[in-house]
Length: 125
Image 1 (tube, rainbow, N blue to C red):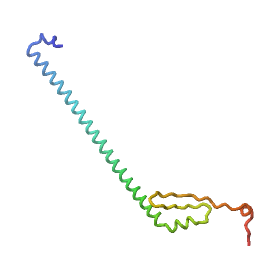
Image 2: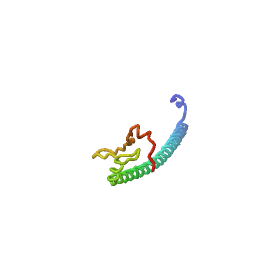
Image 3: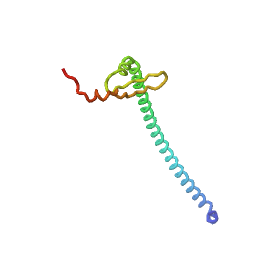
Image 4: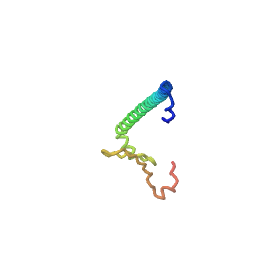
């Protein structure tokens, strides 16, 4: 490439140099604008993610509050729990409470009756 420049005069070389500098300036300006646009887009996305994160944080706190209220209601109704455990309904729920363990709910099947009681018609009157 430099061989093609050997026949040029000083004025022509200065003109070529100016053209190259203008081209480089245009390229840098375009590059800078692309970088600025990308920074703005990333800031916008970061803001959206931040807003979504804050909304999720609010939802998590709301769920924690609801869970705390449910645990409070569960432990406040201790006497009712004992009544449910001794209930004679065919299917009842019994809450098993143990220290430092999560709450477990159990479904108790109905007590088995002997065959004579199951087939005998109810006595009326």
